[in-house]
Length: 281
Length: 282
Image 1: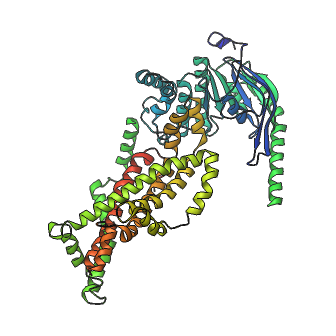
Image 2 (image 1 turned 90 degrees about the horizontal axis):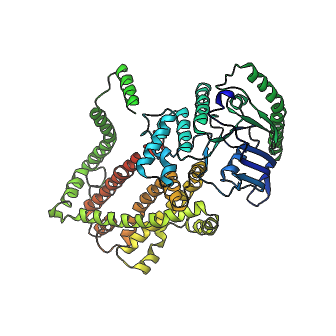
Image 3 (image 1 turned 135 degrees about the vertical axis):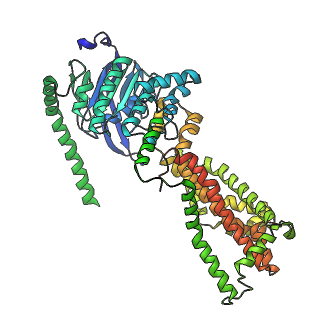
């Protein structure tokens, strides 16, 4: 932590607090279908890079959607800056797994969108957007449409779009999940740099232990569905971090030991569902 | 972008020398016209040698010269008047269908209550061919422009409503979520995100509506137009045994329908959906 102590002062002020949060999905007849989250408790501090790590389909993305306010919790209390979450808001930016850019807008148009909505004057909106396009290394592609860009470039645009209108809290839902290993490695470095430069709180969902260890201040390990926080792990390694670091390797082993039974539980549950569906149909 | 352009240029320079674009275009036009010319040639021969009754199937050369005559003062500019009238009715009916159909389709696609209310109504109205309404509509609106316009509207409203609601429902909800977290609400969200996000489906709906409207229009004009209109003309010409004029009307229907697709919808799609990569190139 010493290397970043100046740039990123540690904080104990809570940014996101979840107390007994629940999320149940219902079918068309309002019968409970899936209990995605049951009694989730966690606290993310200001300016912290918090990684939510868990098996695929465990409900961690759902939790992110609750924090974003695009879905409603079924129970419990969810606070951002001490205020209950009531719908989406400009204090929180979101980056999805597969970019979710507006295909009818250019790179500049996408990045500027949040500023336009916020009523920022055109000239200043352009300048700010160009600054963030530069920050993610896409200068020269301002007028390109998303479909002409590679997967990694699109994801960079999505990150720039989420940063440009300056939300305090950045919610990232497996943003590098669809990228190849090389691109992903670069993007992880970039994101660590951007986080250090912008002093934002980041809530980062992934199922990759490596991503978690390279990025996180703290890792929240989620159990299989219905998800709860199984363990919170502080990663006190200096940055920039290397995958080959022996301490990182040790932590990886530790995390895998906690995570494996959860992944197995998740797979078993899915297999049971598949065979049940097979027997039924 | 400039970098990309040079890269593409360099790549092309390595491959075989690209042919001139106008030559390629000429070739594809020729390839398109060839089968049509063969068909017309065959018709000419068959009619000239008397394999078919030349009164009922006059040779194309005579049909074309008559078509030209009806496009000049000698023929009273007749076909231009007819085409203009038909185009006006098609446009008016289609605009009506768009103005009513897109908001209704959006409502059905986004608001469960509207969906539940209108779905049964639409499902019982959909199977009724729009032409079945013509006699009733004649009683409502009389012989004249209003009836064909209403029939175009009626045949266009269904494809627009269905496709628009499908577009709204199949839209990537993450785009809406992203816009909402950036503060977009209500009209801004609707016009800026949901509408363009559904545009692919909407364009398909409007295309089907105009295509279907064009067909219904001709039939409606035969039954309900008081003067002018290509459908009216074909029907009228039958009464005077002006066989060539009937064929002339049909040729105009084909040409105008073709121009509608390639002169209106293709450029529209190229400047929007293709440019945004929302429509796959074939």
